[in-house]
Every structure is written in C-alpha cells, then in structure tokens.
Length: 257
Ligand code: CAA
Image: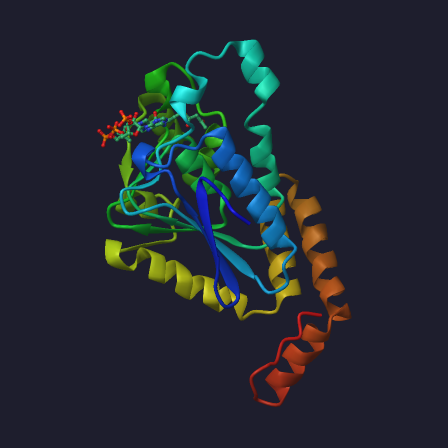
C-alpha cells in the first residue's frame, strides 16, 4: 500500500512504521494518523508479523498533533472531527507495539509513544506535554497515561509547566524501558521486536491484553481475566509444545496455534 506520510517495511517477523513528515518534525496531521491506524489494523491481521515498531527520525519521533491543522478550528468543528477517537483504535491493536524514540516526543508524540507497549529511547530523546503553552491540554490520553506511568506529582509538573524531560529522566521515572546512544536506538528496538516475534503468538497476545487490562479494571476483574487467559492457552498446540520441549530439554518449535 502507498502512503504519503508514513513508510511501512516488513522484516522477518516484525514491521516498522516510520513517520515521514520530517519538514514539520513529524507533526501528526489527520492524514498521517489515518494512514498509521489503517496500517496497524492491516498488520494486526497479518500472521507473518508478530510485533510492530513505530518510529520517527533522529531529530523527532513526533512534535505533537499538527497545530497548523487545528489552529483555526471552532469547538464544534473539533467535536465533529473527533480526531482523537481514531487513537482508540491503536489501543485495540493486539500485537505488541514498540516505540523507538529519538529527538522530540511532544504532545501527541509523547502520547503516541505512551500508547505503545514498550518505549526504547535514544539518549537525545525529549518527552513532554507542552499543550499548556498553546492554550490547551493533552487531548490524546496524556493526562491519563502519563499519570499512570510516572505518578501524579511528576505528571502534574509536566502537564502544568509543559517542560520537556530527558530520555534518562524518562527512564528513571518509568516512562521509558531503555535508553541507548542515538546510533543504536532503532537497532535496539529491532532486537526486541525480533525477540518478541520468536515467542508463541497466542501467549504474546493474551499477555499484552492481560497487562493492559490492569489499567481499566479492578484487581479482581484483572485476576479473573489473567486466570481465564492462562487456562485458555491450554487449548493451544504451543502450550503443549512449550511444556514438552522444557521437559525434553530442547528448544520449542512454535506453530502459532
Ligand atoms: N504542528 C505543526 N507544525 C509543527 C509542529 C506541530 N506540532 N511542531 C513543529 N512544527 C513545524 C514548525 O512550524 C516548523 O515549520 P516551518 O519550518 O514551516 O516554520 C518546523 O516544524 C520545524 O520546527 P521549529 O522551527 O519550531 O523547530 P525547533 O527545533 O526550533 O523547535 C520544537 C522544535 C521545540 C519541537 C518546536 O517545533 C515546538 O515547540 N513544536 C510544537 C510542540 C507542541 O506544542 N506540541 C503539542 C501539539 S498539540 C498536541 O499534540 C495535542 C494533543 O494532545 C494530541
């Protein structure tokens, strides 16, 4: 499929989606988001792809929603566009999403990285929710996901001041999984994607779902979901193979069933 604003490549076991609006620091306009969501949904149906990396370039992961596109909109127009509703579809993607972040991850860029399951950052990455500086607040989940990731005090500081934090701070605060020199961040994400792609896909799918469940249910509901998912996996060939291989002291051969 041809895209105007993203580049999609399929590697062995995983896909890479790269934002391609470098002239505006990958500002996330409607078209780009449409292309991103459609690609993710199509990849989610592709059995050959087990994991997806979302990335930008060295200078910017994404500097936020496209300010120029919404600057003159009325509230009624914004409601009609409901541009952030599209983001809910990213939340429903079943395959693991890795954000490989370098440079600016601001506003919607930070929110998109947080919508992914794992964040690998280059030492030059900068995270922030600067919406307050342009008269608004985060609109694509920032107040909720940032608070869950770093706690109330730090989220308040970032959302109220709009200040950026460094990759290392983001790692210490629990927002980012790993920080590596800029020349390695994409490779690091690829290594991780390859590792996840080598795991049994049904278990990966249910593991992701179960972890995400912890954000929007009670502990009891989450435990129930986890337990049922665990039992359900005993209907899979991969459970039989995985446990048999362990007993026979050999590497498992996953069928994905
Ligand atoms: N929307 C549209 N265009 C953007 C943009 C954005 N979010 N961020 C950068 N650009 C454009 C600039 O307008 C500029 O274009 P021109 O060359 O045509 O002038 C180009 O990208 C390069 O940007 P700068 O010249 O500003 O680059 P810089 O290195 O001096 O500064 C920056 C970098 C600090 C990231 C600065 O660009 C900036 O502050 N950008 C806006 C960040 C922001 O406020 N993001 C939040 C957006 S709102 C949002 O995301 C809502 C939400 O919750 C989803």
